[in-house]
Length: 141
Image (cartoon, rainbow, N blue to C red; front, side, top):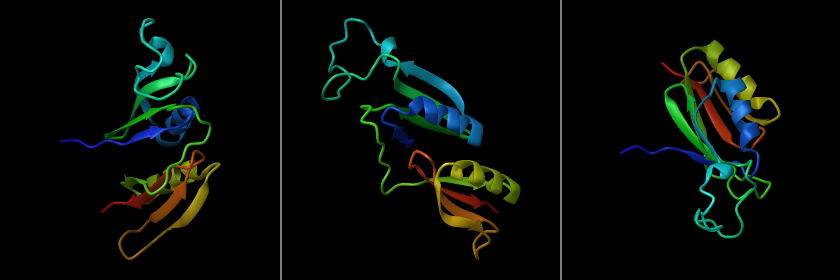
């Protein structure tokens, strides 16, 4: 069994893909836009209530960040994504990597816990990025 994260950016998925590419070196593995759907697909065939988002919006994307695949889409394009009660965790091999990734994620976001040495790691911090996604960055042993 494999459990993966699927994030709905509510209309800002292209922006998020570019941001994670720059901040974390994320690579696009797969990208489908609503315009890629079959022309004869009924408007509600995607399983969502209401009209489909615009054709240029991301229906489904897979990003590879290190050894992990993160899935994402524009969702229903409501304009404001809400990522409550979850965080994504990054284990960095070095303090320098942790600092680089933490600072990149914090750009335009909000630091919740500065990256500091703790009893369990030489570096641990928490940040909400510019999209509201929570991240824990920890230096592994």
